[in-house]
Length: 41
Image (cartoon, rainbow, N blue to C red; front, side, top):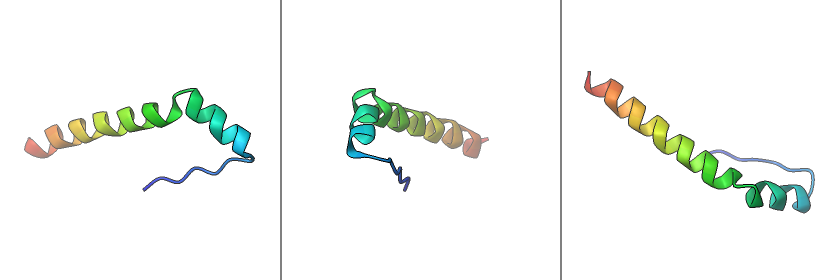
C-alpha cells in the first residue's frame, strides 16, 4: 500500500485532477507485468 500526504486538500485535489492517481496505478500494473515475466525465466 502506498500513502501520499499533502499539505492541503487543494494540493491533493490538484494532484488527482492532474492524473496522478491513474498514472501511479498504470505504473504499478506495468511493474507487475515486468516482474511476472522475470519470475517465469
